[in-house]
Length: 194
Image 1: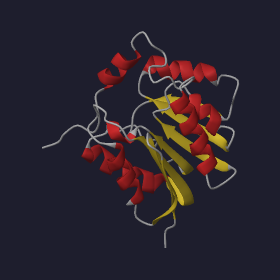
Image 2: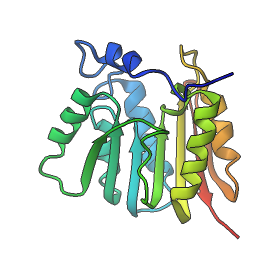
Image 3: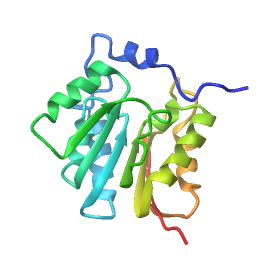
Image 4: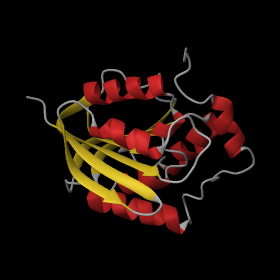
Protein backbone atom coordinates (compact mmCIF):
# COMPACT_ATOMS: atom_id res chain seq x y z
CA UNK A 1 0.00 0.00 0.00
CA UNK A 2 1.31 3.44 -0.97
CA UNK A 3 1.96 5.61 2.08
CA UNK A 4 4.15 8.45 0.85
CA UNK A 5 2.77 11.45 -1.03
CA UNK A 6 5.91 12.45 -2.92
CA UNK A 7 9.63 11.91 -3.30
CA UNK A 8 11.50 12.68 -0.05
CA UNK A 9 13.12 16.07 0.63
CA UNK A 10 16.53 14.39 0.37
CA UNK A 11 15.96 13.80 -3.36
CA UNK A 12 15.73 17.55 -3.96
CA UNK A 13 18.48 18.40 -1.48
CA UNK A 14 20.82 16.10 -3.43
CA UNK A 15 19.84 17.77 -6.71
CA UNK A 16 20.77 21.19 -5.34
CA UNK A 17 23.90 20.05 -3.49
CA UNK A 18 26.60 22.32 -4.86
CA UNK A 19 24.44 23.54 -7.74
CA UNK A 20 21.99 26.43 -7.22
CA UNK A 21 20.30 25.78 -10.59
CA UNK A 22 20.52 22.03 -11.40
CA UNK A 23 17.81 22.22 -14.08
CA UNK A 24 19.37 25.34 -15.67
CA UNK A 25 16.23 27.46 -15.34
CA UNK A 26 18.22 30.62 -16.03
CA UNK A 27 19.93 29.71 -19.32
CA UNK A 28 18.56 26.49 -20.86
CA UNK A 29 16.88 26.92 -24.28
CA UNK A 30 14.35 24.27 -23.18
CA UNK A 31 13.43 26.23 -20.03
CA UNK A 32 13.29 29.51 -21.94
CA UNK A 33 10.99 28.01 -24.61
CA UNK A 34 8.78 26.36 -21.99
CA UNK A 35 8.37 29.65 -20.09
CA UNK A 36 7.61 31.58 -23.29
CA UNK A 37 4.92 29.10 -24.33
CA UNK A 38 3.49 29.03 -20.80
CA UNK A 39 3.16 32.81 -20.64
CA UNK A 40 1.73 33.00 -24.16
CA UNK A 41 -0.84 30.34 -23.22
CA UNK A 42 -2.25 32.20 -20.23
CA UNK A 43 -5.84 33.07 -21.19
CA UNK A 44 -5.88 36.29 -19.18
CA UNK A 45 -3.57 39.24 -19.41
CA UNK A 46 -3.67 39.70 -15.63
CA UNK A 47 -4.41 37.53 -12.59
CA UNK A 48 -5.10 38.54 -9.01
CA UNK A 49 -3.29 35.77 -7.14
CA UNK A 50 -1.06 33.06 -8.63
CA UNK A 51 0.45 30.02 -6.92
CA UNK A 52 3.56 28.24 -8.18
CA UNK A 53 4.59 25.21 -6.13
CA UNK A 54 8.11 23.98 -6.78
CA UNK A 55 9.30 27.45 -7.73
CA UNK A 56 13.01 26.62 -7.28
CA UNK A 57 15.16 29.75 -7.64
CA UNK A 58 12.24 31.85 -8.86
CA UNK A 59 13.14 32.10 -12.56
CA UNK A 60 9.59 31.32 -13.72
CA UNK A 61 8.09 33.09 -10.70
CA UNK A 62 9.72 36.29 -11.87
CA UNK A 63 7.98 36.00 -15.23
CA UNK A 64 4.65 35.13 -13.61
CA UNK A 65 4.93 38.28 -11.51
CA UNK A 66 4.58 40.32 -14.70
CA UNK A 67 1.10 38.82 -15.13
CA UNK A 68 -0.24 38.68 -11.56
CA UNK A 69 -0.90 41.17 -8.78
CA UNK A 70 0.41 38.66 -6.23
CA UNK A 71 2.43 35.47 -6.64
CA UNK A 72 3.05 32.84 -4.00
CA UNK A 73 5.97 30.55 -4.76
CA UNK A 74 6.78 27.44 -2.76
CA UNK A 75 10.07 25.55 -2.63
CA UNK A 76 10.90 22.46 -0.57
CA UNK A 77 14.66 23.04 -0.12
CA UNK A 78 15.09 25.78 2.51
CA UNK A 79 18.34 27.21 1.11
CA UNK A 80 16.81 27.41 -2.38
CA UNK A 81 13.66 29.05 -0.98
CA UNK A 82 15.94 31.57 0.76
CA UNK A 83 17.66 32.36 -2.56
CA UNK A 84 14.27 32.88 -4.22
CA UNK A 85 13.18 35.15 -1.35
CA UNK A 86 16.35 37.24 -1.84
CA UNK A 87 15.59 37.48 -5.54
CA UNK A 88 12.26 39.11 -4.66
CA UNK A 89 13.35 41.08 -1.60
CA UNK A 90 12.39 44.39 -3.26
CA UNK A 91 9.17 43.05 -4.79
CA UNK A 92 6.23 43.11 -2.41
CA UNK A 93 4.01 41.29 -4.91
CA UNK A 94 5.96 38.01 -4.65
CA UNK A 95 6.18 35.84 -1.58
CA UNK A 96 8.12 32.57 -1.32
CA UNK A 97 7.44 30.02 1.39
CA UNK A 98 9.30 26.85 2.22
CA UNK A 99 7.27 23.70 1.76
CA UNK A 100 6.09 21.02 -0.63
CA UNK A 101 2.81 19.99 -2.11
CA UNK A 102 0.52 18.42 -1.27
CA UNK A 103 1.11 18.50 2.47
CA UNK A 104 2.07 22.18 2.76
CA UNK A 105 -0.60 23.46 0.40
CA UNK A 106 -1.54 27.00 1.54
CA UNK A 107 -4.64 26.73 3.67
CA UNK A 108 -7.41 29.31 3.38
CA UNK A 109 -5.90 30.77 0.20
CA UNK A 110 -7.77 31.29 -3.04
CA UNK A 111 -5.98 31.56 -6.36
CA UNK A 112 -7.15 32.44 -9.84
CA UNK A 113 -3.99 30.93 -11.36
CA UNK A 114 -2.15 27.79 -10.29
CA UNK A 115 0.97 26.84 -12.24
CA UNK A 116 2.15 23.24 -11.98
CA UNK A 117 5.40 23.39 -13.90
CA UNK A 118 7.19 20.05 -13.80
CA UNK A 119 6.24 19.43 -10.19
CA UNK A 120 3.36 16.91 -10.31
CA UNK A 121 5.36 13.88 -11.38
CA UNK A 122 7.41 14.03 -8.18
CA UNK A 123 4.23 13.03 -6.37
CA UNK A 124 2.95 9.51 -5.90
CA UNK A 125 -0.48 8.61 -7.26
CA UNK A 126 -2.11 9.31 -3.88
CA UNK A 127 -0.12 12.56 -3.60
CA UNK A 128 -1.31 13.67 -7.04
CA UNK A 129 -4.91 12.79 -6.18
CA UNK A 130 -4.67 14.90 -3.01
CA UNK A 131 -3.00 17.75 -4.91
CA UNK A 132 -5.80 17.77 -7.48
CA UNK A 133 -8.38 17.95 -4.70
CA UNK A 134 -6.50 20.89 -3.17
CA UNK A 135 -6.25 22.60 -6.57
CA UNK A 136 -10.01 22.38 -6.95
CA UNK A 137 -10.66 23.59 -3.40
CA UNK A 138 -8.36 26.61 -3.65
CA UNK A 139 -9.12 27.71 -7.21
CA UNK A 140 -11.60 30.55 -7.57
CA UNK A 141 -14.50 30.15 -9.99
CA UNK A 142 -13.18 31.00 -13.44
CA UNK A 143 -9.61 30.37 -12.29
CA UNK A 144 -7.01 28.73 -14.49
CA UNK A 145 -4.62 25.83 -13.92
CA UNK A 146 -1.53 25.49 -16.09
CA UNK A 147 0.18 22.13 -16.23
CA UNK A 148 3.46 21.84 -18.10
CA UNK A 149 5.40 18.60 -18.01
CA UNK A 150 8.52 17.10 -19.53
CA UNK A 151 7.69 14.27 -21.92
CA UNK A 152 10.90 12.29 -21.51
CA UNK A 153 11.74 9.70 -18.93
CA UNK A 154 12.33 10.72 -15.34
CA UNK A 155 13.21 8.88 -12.15
CA UNK A 156 10.01 10.12 -10.53
CA UNK A 157 6.92 8.13 -9.50
CA UNK A 158 4.68 9.49 -12.28
CA UNK A 159 5.07 10.65 -15.87
CA UNK A 160 4.25 14.03 -17.34
CA UNK A 161 1.35 12.38 -19.16
CA UNK A 162 -0.03 11.15 -15.81
CA UNK A 163 -0.05 14.68 -14.42
CA UNK A 164 -1.50 16.15 -17.61
CA UNK A 165 -4.34 13.60 -17.51
CA UNK A 166 -5.09 14.40 -13.85
CA UNK A 167 -5.33 18.13 -14.58
CA UNK A 168 -7.59 17.50 -17.57
CA UNK A 169 -9.83 15.33 -15.36
CA UNK A 170 -10.41 18.03 -12.71
CA UNK A 171 -14.16 18.21 -12.04
CA UNK A 172 -15.87 21.25 -13.58
CA UNK A 173 -12.76 22.09 -15.61
CA UNK A 174 -12.81 23.04 -19.26
CA UNK A 175 -9.65 22.64 -21.35
CA UNK A 176 -8.69 25.97 -22.92
CA UNK A 177 -5.20 25.18 -24.23
CA UNK A 178 -3.59 21.92 -25.26
CA UNK A 179 -0.08 22.29 -26.59
CA UNK A 180 2.40 19.53 -27.42
CA UNK A 181 6.04 19.82 -28.34
CA UNK A 182 8.58 16.99 -28.58
CA UNK A 183 9.92 17.80 -25.12
CA UNK A 184 6.87 18.95 -23.15
CA UNK A 185 3.08 18.94 -22.81
CA UNK A 186 1.23 22.07 -21.75
CA UNK A 187 -2.42 22.18 -20.75
CA UNK A 188 -4.53 25.04 -19.42
CA UNK A 189 -7.90 24.30 -17.84
CA UNK A 190 -10.43 26.72 -16.40
CA UNK A 191 -12.50 25.86 -13.33
CA UNK A 192 -16.14 26.52 -14.15
CA UNK A 193 -18.35 25.19 -11.34
CA UNK A 194 -22.09 24.87 -12.03
